[in-house]
Image (tube, rainbow, N blue to C red):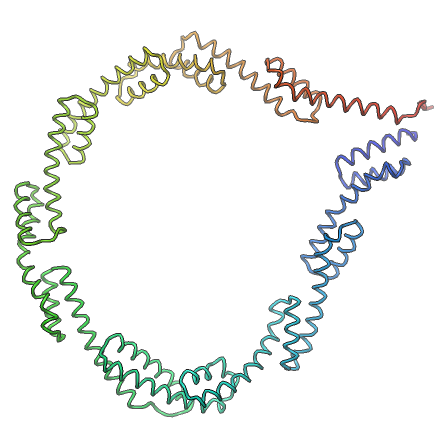
Length: 571
């Protein structure tokens, strides 16, 4: 190639690389431009885009280095980012991460030097610096534990000394707590353990004495639980320091147990009485009264249950009469049993079954009368209501079938009238409603065929007027099924074909975008004109085609300007 052709080829390569913005294409185009002797100004934009293409990789290296937190990788990534022209803001996070990692290295060295000394001040300083620079908890755990151990020993000695001097149970327990006293020797803890045994025995005796005097179950339970808890703690201390339990405490505990058993039996008896009084069951009342007498309850405790027992014995016969009347389902017998229950003052719930049974029988009788009246009136609404009430009231199946037969006959009569009226008015909505009414009334298909045919022709007429493809397609299918001889079928098919050609043309135009191939644009415009589309529908594609032509013209002029005045012919 001569120099002019090489320059043209290089310029074309640069333009194509600038459009794609591919790093490889830009690099190759720059090399070709330099070899062709293009000016720096001609290469400037490509060089700028090459740098921009390198930046995503530089940013990715920064992100990977930040994620790894490797000092070496961070330094290399920062240097590379600076070389490709990343901003200070883009490099700020990596530089901050690098500085933080360098501080961590120093903090780890401080920890390794401070921990062997066991010096509280030095370990505290190293720990604070490690926390400040963000070391992992696993790296700080060892020195934190060592520092805590040293502090805990000093605090434990001070705590034990103060507790022995005060002599209170709470302070002594706190001082002997496993966490506080773990670092102290048994000799350092012995005085505190003796003092705590004495305090616990005194507290147990006081609690048991107060509960025995009150004779309240809750207080007795609480006191025994507390005393047993104290006992467990005292036994543990005595196993360490030696000695035996105070007999006064043990005697009070036995007395509290005996009183608690007696009071709990009375409570159980009272509860059984209350449950029997609620249930009103004869056997429950008899058993609960007997148990209450054995538990030692007073006359006042038993008075209500004994009165209920006497009343309940009177009610037994009334309940039995109600039960038998419900089984019989006889209205007169139910009424008599209900009156007997009312005299016996039975509860509403006990009377409910009999009253419900009586109401059911009365409702069934009324439902039969309603069905007979509806059959005579021959009204669809009345017949439906009567059948519904009859089913709900449990009317005999044969009576229901007779009423349902009358309903079916009346529904078919009304459906035939509706079909005739709809065929006369030729309303699509009326025809659909009448056909649905006929199908609901189970009319034979032959009686519905004429209405189906009229509906199909009306749908074809409306579809032709609407010119909607889906509507036309649906109407044609209905016409082919119900009105195959209609003259409108052929017309509707022609309209559907025309509408589909227009839709296809619009679809072809919609997929043609700015910058598309001129052949595609010309083809889409030709298809649109053939389908008789409006000018405004063709305008966007026409404008895109004109733009392509203008771009081609400009490119052709630029190429002629770059070529030398006299072409050089190859020999």
